[in-house]
Image 1 (cartoon, rainbow, N blue to C red):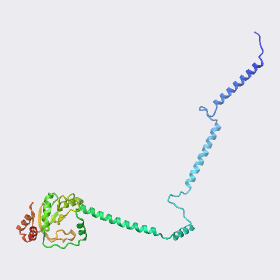
Image 2 (tube, rainbow, N blue to C red; image 1 turned 90 degrees about the vertical axis):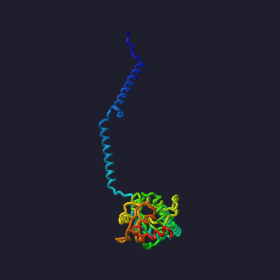
Image 3 (cartoon, rainbow, N blue to C red; image 1 turned 135 degrees about the horizontal axis):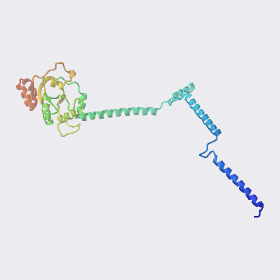
Length: 300
């Protein structure tokens, strides 16, 4: 086989191929040792530099925090202290301000409006109290303007009653006692001594002339109702209705009574009309005691 010599073109092609292969191998090696590759580590000198830079940054941050803590902290309510010149100027400005008639007028009007509102609220409270007690407005005014009641003379018929009695029976006794100028006494209040509303409602139901009337304008009978457990105990009353003729004024408050207040000499029991109870006291020897009450009851 004959041996041929390579031509110049063949030599140039071989050289180019060799150079290209070398460059490819170099690129592959660079990619394998690139710092950004996930499976390769930075050279030891670069890692040490990064650690040193991180330590220095942490030291700077720690020193900044310590300096911040060492600085005095001003509270939210702390105000800068003015200088003497600033204080003097402030007082001079206040003294130079002329009084404002408009502001004084508004202040006076506000004060008058406050007085009017207070008076209106007081009147509204009085009205609610009248409605709770079932009294008319003139009656409340009469109670407020009334002076001490004159001391009663003679004997006063006192009917001992209870809230458990039928309202119709209590209304009948109230109509009769109004003529005889008597009093209805209860041992306690329905619902307990701390609750006034049930007793006020019962009082209104007993004393209204018209049982169907509602509100503070209803006309009432002129009969006193008292809650007095002491008078029950003094007379030994254990059941109702009962009647006693008590000398003096049985409606006096405890603080105005004497230690030994007058007591009735006789007590009669029974669900009878007031005239029958008065007659029973008369039969027991109390004719003198019941004379005036019987005369008034009969209209003489």
